[in-house]
Length: 367
Ligand SMILES: [Zn+2]
Image (cartoon, rainbow, N blue to C red; front, side, top):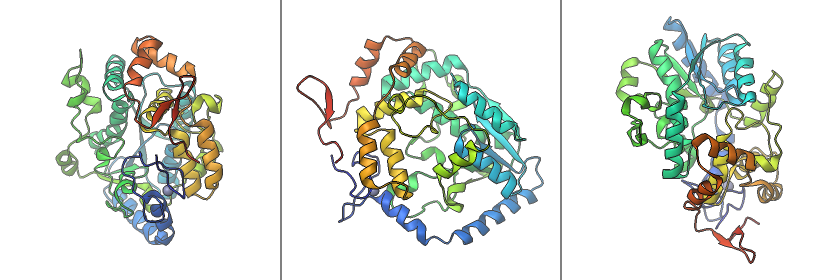
């Protein structure tokens, strides 16, 4: 397996490409951010906010929130810096964690109206099980609902603007901002990659009507509603680490689990849902890298750690997952641990081999 010579991203990451120096397109994209006219973009953002205010709607904008670091930052930025009357939209995860519950409450108590939408737990459980069996990714359906909820809230309450965090497709295909901050096709992002039609989630005992929360509005519906959707990360340089410090100073609770149980060395990601932790272990089996790789890359791009430090962190934490998280997921979908490993092993990628004592190891771990 080949890795970027500048960060720690492997060749198995969707949309990756390397130049002659072995540097990946993500690194090139982050280098290009230094040349962006951020002041110019800030002015564009102020114009967009003013345009939303001029519509005279009840709320000026919807911000989709989990109560985590980025959404706390976005909600306060929209209200306090852009001066917008914000409606928060929260898709309540099935099995929300105590920390997640605290954080969303903490954000609401900073003075917001919040539209809270909770999809049918019985359906959540069924589609998570189906997605685990089909794609080795039980989180996929809830991501659909997560992105659809703020858009639905905006259409319902006739709100002219929806603010999302940061585009990820931009980084996959090239080093240019393809959509110029327009988030209307957020459903096509690489993590989601679906047309909006959720019919492929149909499974035993789940009908089309059960899937309403997972159905992203069509481009036609979005156009007719007149709602504008933007990525704040296009207009304002994105810094998850700074957002975490910002939110912690305002009462955000972070994880207290051991880093080896989380498979990541920071404690401020995946706060409201435990399945995401286990899902990164599954990604590690499938693609040979997990969340520690993602966060080390982000820290290298931001200049906070060296590649050498990143390599060390990846080797220590990547793909690790506490048994408690796996067990919890098994109980949730009603299978045994043996059955879990049986299914999970079907998705193991070709970058693995067994060592002398029969343990799976990466053929080419990062060096
Ligand atoms: Zn790179």
